[in-house]
Image (cartoon, rainbow, N blue to C red):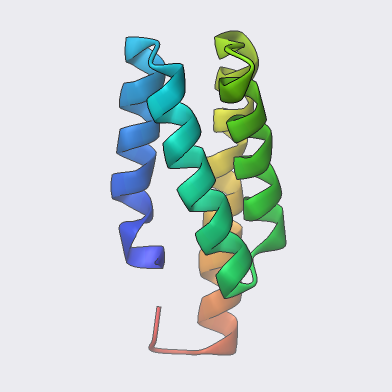
Length: 88
């Protein structure tokens, strides 16, 4: 999961840039589910906010929500590294 974060971020950025709310919602939903599964609740919450904004078609709010993803992803990566050294 953590290794795929860069690709997920690129897909989200591309969907935002293209104004593709449905694609953005799908990407955010996948990220939310995966983050919750691995125990990254703050990342899951950020992805949920993005998913909700995309579902509503509110792209300005989606951009704000998307800005939260990178710091939360880094926090999840750091927490995982602390719990499982050498397996990030």
